[in-house]
Length: 367
Image (cartoon, rainbow, N blue to C red; front, side, top):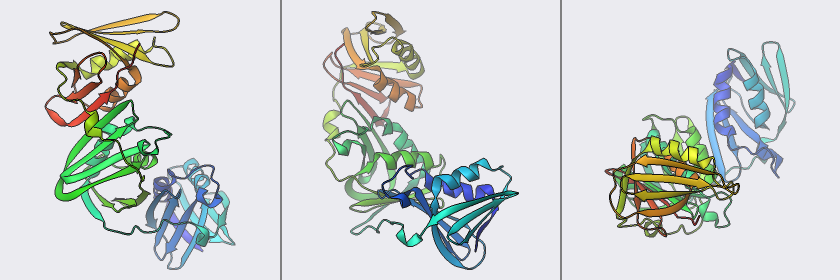
């Protein structure tokens, strides 16, 4: 039975949309497969890792209906290796998927579609949000680098999404630093808080377009659904209590230093070369008109950078992990950033001048 016939990219593009979540090694072999369902002239592709499920579709040929599962990565690698201009056909015979392109032939083993696990639809009250793909993609980019990785406090391995009235907030922290960003929504909603898993956040960042096309978000008590373009993306939520982020954001830091983001980034990148490989510490030494960045390592090598700044006041010498500073500077797209400090034992607060929609907090370290 012929499933698909057409240009390579017409099948490769939807396949790549669902393949990102497929694990290479899985305890359930069928989870390495993609489910292909032909219903008349629509061919639907679906992949899942039990926690996340992505579905999309493309044009099929013929009027028959069938379903099968096939190794997702193998099919993707074969399609990628074909010329861009290749005309591809997929047909299903004797429990095998045959792919033809020019004089190339590939026969792939399949597993029954009825064995493929699907995520159950969410129950309970749902909240529907609408914004553009660009808005949400930008929000994720501002905070996702601060998420924890494989932390025993599992709720930190994700991103807090808060909806309150017509404001959406996203917050990420790994216990050493915290990133916060907010965006105005077109409609007002009751307050709610959910935690998106790390893998969901990274996959959404990869898939969302940087344009004004619509993104529909449907939040239920245990899962969240994102719809954009031809893609339906469903994810379970992390069940846990996120730390009180508002308590972490310092108030009243009296030493405010406006800095060129690019200049600070380049100075920190150079100083980072001679930091201790394990602790990655740099000292920020603040004095009238000057910010010095000093690093040293176990071989007693030293680096010192100096930036002229608009500051007059009490001197300060405070240490930070340089990776945490580089992360925020690399993920902002602004000319000027403001650093607010208090004393050597207090965290630093980075904000954007005249903008309350972004905050980044870094804990100090002893060097």
